[in-house]
Length: 333
Length: 264
Ligand SMILES: Cc1cc2nc3c(=O)[nH]c(=O)nc-3n(C[C@H](O)[C@H](O)[C@H](O)COP(=O)(O)OP(=O)(O)OC[C@H]3O[C@@H](n4cnc5c(N)ncnc54)[C@H](O)[C@@H]3O)c2cc1C
Image (cartoon, rainbow over the protein chains, first blue to last red):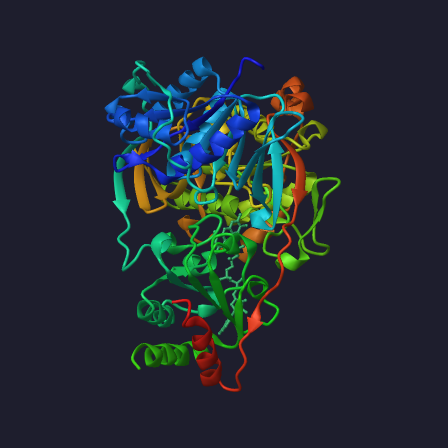
């Protein structure tokens, strides 16, 4: 197994730039590589991947592999799995880090199946065990009610998909030196079985959830799509947007893309107003990064009060309308 | 159209977090007393997806559950929703498997059943939630895999699957047979009718052992596990909630606004 060496990051490119998660992975990857006394490498794929290689070195990569093929510009599960598994069998990284992104969530488990490695999905912490030198990945289990530390003693590569915005971005240092290796192997398009024929971007009213500074989030207790209008009114007033729990999305009151939580979006606004939602851990993990959480719930025992900074035990229908009035008064003195 | 759905029985994930207990030494979760286990949420929606295909194209649904003998309950639940046949895969050798072991056993049973067009799994289990079985299964069977499906259509042996992305959706076309993992966005599962529940209760659910599906026990040897759990823990969080005082909703609202002005 000692023939497997080094930490490799699977890079992602968005709009011609290194994706934020890639810079985060280079940061934590650098730390792991230092702990092992091994190299940190990055794989970049895409028609114009080469122009980003220098920058990746500045972010801490010792080596950047560049696979310049415009077929990689759009993610395809079949080609990526095939090509990256071949590449890993040649380069033999001991650790392979992937973002817990649209691409990573689809690719990592399949790549793991092909490479027969050991994968932990949605890792929120990574470290090297000082005695065994194994990668230890911490990941949520039971919907975030608990966490497990996972290791892979026998299988290689040791893989993890890493949650976004958990690790700080790597610091850039343009004086760093590194090696750029261009990989000539092309992908064989004839292996494609599953083809993406259309992509539909959901148009958001106002700010995106991930960028919002204020989120008014509603749960099953809201009761109807119409009642959600009240949440929208407050959100608009505060320059924010509306999120929801899975139960509210299930009911069709709110588009599914507004779901917050473990299987939805992870947000970290300044203010998160949680209205008529119980605070299941699988929901909470999506908003724990908020600076301030306000809970409005008629059940004083609701779990949301265990994580909120401010709490109001009341029927939201009585509180929200006056709250909107008070904010209006405060905004226009 | 023959769809095979893989379903898992899990401790009810909807118990209040305060009731959730673990045994850190055994690295196990202590099932809440008196709360019966349930079908894993996403797996139930995978059964729903299969039922919608059957509503439209007729055909057959087979469900498979790897677990204890009690897993016959979730198989019966799937049958009451509209599945035709179901099997439980139970063997001492099937205990404590990782994702590779689970996918291997499911793959063996699927090969024994044969003649399928589509295999569905939930996107991840509601308990350990490794989120890998569907993809590894597809690799073992050499089939295309479409993850995070929220709508599945079939036309002329071709699948058209809508899958969920962080910022929207995409439509993927793939030939059958294929594997897909189903996400909750597909919508709520149907409630079985009383008659269906009664018929499901009477249904014979065969239990398949390792030898029945020709599983090679050396594949399941504990020394071959790909991942191991070394520790489980519940993060401690200090409760720091300040309850906003006020005799009327208006007073409460005023008090809250004054707390928040500095923030926004
Ligand atoms: C593997 C897994 C992943 C999951 N992922 C997610 C996820 O990503 N996001 C997510 O949200 N959920 C997720 N869930 C579901 C989660 O476990 C809960 O079921 C869900 O979050 C509950 O939604 P809720 O709080 O809206 O509903 P409930 O739990 O039913 O809570 C409703 C609350 O509203 C209160 N209420 C009712 N009426 C009023 C009123 N008039 N005024 C004030 N309060 C009122 C009630 O007191 C109650 O606390 C996941 C579950 C599993 C098993």
